[in-house]
Image (cartoon, rainbow, N blue to C red):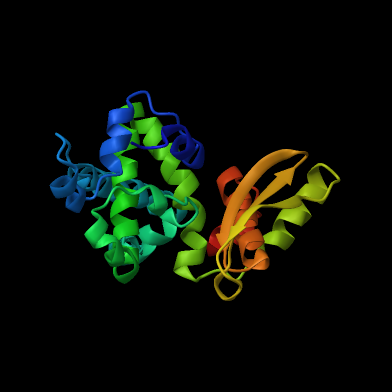
Length: 236
């Protein structure tokens, strides 16, 4: 029914119980069409929403020791919004695998952000049920935490330049960017780029141009691995 291994590779997480992954990929409209004893991702979405709120709150508490409660609450609201969650999922090309009724396929384009946001929370909840708290927190770090600076629009840092400065200072080598794949028509391209440091993949990013994808790959590498200077940290 699902290409489990492909989805697990995209998520960089191997499920022990693939029935949980299956549930996370089922839109409620599919239940009326499939004729099987299945459930949709809505309960997992509920669980993932609660986890996301906690992970974001904890991250903001640690990142901003000088922020008051009201400031933290306002920022958290932005970082758990539908728009934010859809952005978190954008690095993972999962929509083609969503099980949805054929008659509802057009809804994906009309309500793409909402569906992507729901799917992100369902995946987060599924990973928690399958692998526990640490596995869910790791997925949050890889998928959401690395995008905080982008979503808050509070840092104009050139992450490619920052990563280059770091690698030249520490390993005396430049990072290497590689286009993993590109898709879509010429007027609406999508690129997935990986950045490598000493031949080890350090981050991935998706964008409508190679430059944008490279910036997001560099941002993931810098934020996920902690390769940032103190000035940058205070601006995140």
